[in-house]
Length: 220
Image 1 (cartoon, helix red, strand yellow):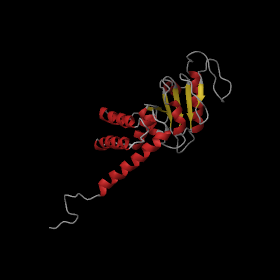
Image 2 (cartoon, rainbow, N blue to C red):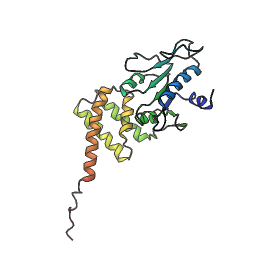
Image 3 (tube, rainbow, N blue to C red):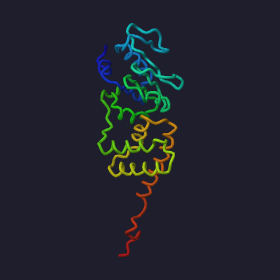
Image 4 (tube, rainbow, N blue to C red):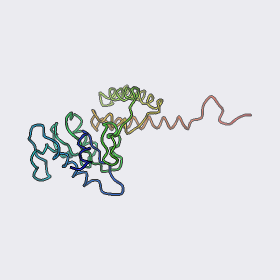
């Protein structure tokens, strides 16, 4: 077993970012299989789906895709070039190892930071650096989306939490969306995106609107 695989096996979330200079997609797929082979199965059952005959003591490997169906918790999930819609299926997994192989560069960077994923690219554990204040604001945004952000009051309260993040210098659109995606469907996320669009537009307006307390042209 290589030293890199030994390190990978210490982590529950493994992130294979899309490489800009060399192929990372096929090696990422092989890594998912290697993790399943090297992991001890919880009950000795399970076979990889679509990757050939498993070796002895292979942990269950699920390849998550649009039509892959329900994922069994406790195995190894290979999210190979997933969309956000596909990743909904992994939201409630509590014991599975997730190997995410990215298709678009940086698309799942926020997901990896939020989950403290091990990055195969640099051998480091990623970190969102959430303070208690930021965490509370993110929780508030998700709470206001209990109806999928369908009401005007949902938007007003969500905007208030977004302003808190901006005031703290911690507003990160992709991190907000990744946090919400942990429990919300992509259908609801589309509405949250529109709220974020309006918030960002208002923030840009604040930066470009002259201060009303001062004349636009000095009189002295």
